[in-house]
Image (tube, rainbow, N blue to C red; front, side, top):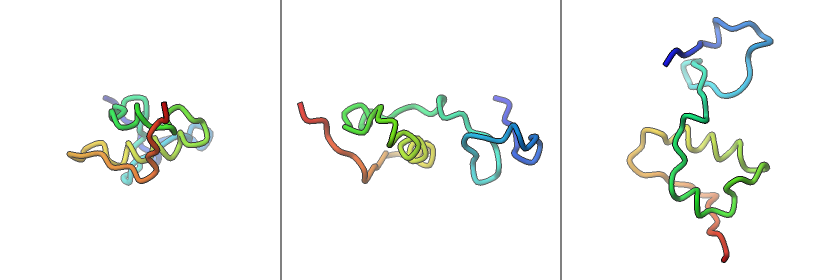
Length: 74
């Protein structure tokens, strides 16, 4: 995968997510954990940015944790 670094981008091209080293991250390539599929916040536009940031932050962890998780009431 060819990553772009924020220092090599024109100001008008800078948007979205970047890792701590300044590399652009495509959040669509981060797998959604199964816990998210049973969460009331899944597909909630008001929560999407925070959910994506949480998933990106934990993408290499063994276990996924989310303190905003709310189980779907069926």
